Image 1 (cartoon, helix red, strand yellow):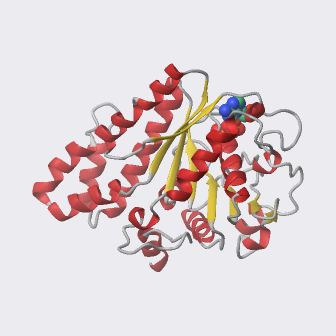
Image 2: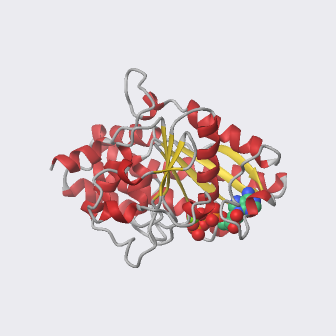
Length: 316
Ligand SMILES: Nc1ncnc2c1ncn2[C@@H]1O[C@H](COP(=O)(O)OP(=O)(O)OP(=O)(O)O)[C@@H](O)[C@H]1O
Ligand SMILES: [Mg+2]
């Protein structure tokens, strides 16, 4: 499962999601692309489906029990789970969110791409954490870089907190990470935690090492802008202990700028300079070492699995 996330303000999350789904599908892999940007659904329009016959609203309302029931086949290999923009769609209970994450993880395809939308709400963070590969789409501007950092921090916070087995551990993490101005870095947090509870500290460090983050620098105009994004990766590692290499660099092009025609954002032909960049990114995603990211001893198939904390929550 691949989550496509990032800040607000049109950084290009949906554009990247649609185009990598198309690229992976063209390689012959079965792909499902899920519009989980509830309340601001637009993947269907980008993919040329103006009026989806069924959307994720049917699943949320229990009119459909699986996402397969509402999938729309947009090409021989790519199916779309269209989102919904009805009022209140984004206000799901934690149980409903979990049901959706579980259904996404159960989609029987080779690769699931989830457009999680912007922000750091639990609905977004939980979708990101549940994915094997987390694409953080950024633009070379400060708000976008700040937003991506805030989302990564929210993920680290939630992962660490979920791993805490009692209130003392949770309080320690909240106190260390929750402050706006004087928050500790993760290495500092681990340094405090290790003498108290070395097993817990090692468990957090190990999980963060397997985060599977990738930065995608989108809408680049020149090499200098690429450099600005590249400088972000070591900062993220120093503060959050997450590896997030710059895996994709996508230029700003007219083809991706979209237009008034439905489907205008999708690169259908390889004639644009963006196409090789998208194909490279798709290749890197397909090459991701899922067994390592999932902490499994032996290689596994491409099929999605539910993270341990989701399984635990579902069991309770
Ligand atoms: N590489 C690019 N070159 C040119 N235009 C781009 C590029 N990437 C995205 N765009 C354009 O930027 C606009 C915003 O892109 P998109 O809708 O994918 O962003 P988003 O991050 O999904 O936004 P939102 O948070 O609103 O969902 C669109 O008009 C899109 O066509
Ligand atoms: Mg979007």
